[in-house]
Image (cartoon, rainbow, N blue to C red; front, side, top):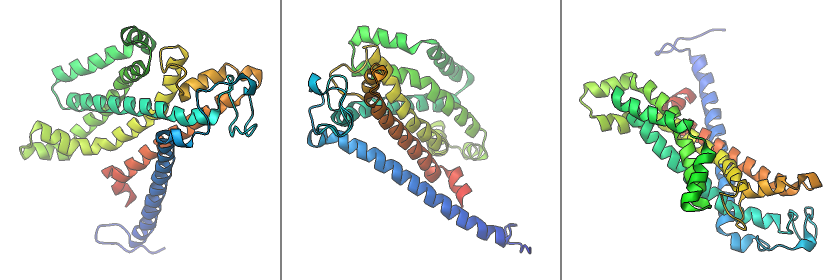
Length: 300
């Protein structure tokens, strides 16, 4: 095999091979983001137009039709232990579950990312104060925090959101802080400092774009886990309150009747949570590949 040297030291043959690989990588990333957006948009639209698309009242209980299988007596996905239509509850539950998960994940990502940026570029005293406070937050059991918040605010959505935010901030801060510290020693930061750039200019114009990819990936990856975590709070009676439809509550209620042989009330919402969680993970990975400068250069 003959290699011809190119001006930049790379062989023309290797450069020709890299171009198709880069194009294939970009196409695969674009397809991944598109599929994820379609899945997420579909569930969001179903939740927004739930009154129009849900075939039944999600809270209407009918003991005469409980434990119906998929397709029986006009119920496409069957009914639960109280005779409520599972499809209707899945559609309406998307409203509550997605709002709680998205709001909590976005809030914890913004707060945790801001703390990590400040700590990563501050002196030892400020950074130590912030990161030691984060370590203290790790020490608090989340369930205890949720119970205290339930006493203060009463059981409901507010308790779920605040509990998730409190539990997620330490993890987000730790992950982003490590990346910020890594970026701080890079040459482009030293160049900006030598040119007289200020603290906030370096922080938001130089460092933030380089850690944004990982922040987006971690933030979107939180959403699926937050939906599952909210179900545990609902099972304790301090989360979303019945009869409000919620995917987490549907899983916890369905799990109680699996022993009776009816797996659909727990299986179907579990599959929905799995699909939505995967979609957010795909979206985060795809956005990282599209917008992170390191991945853009690697794909060329």
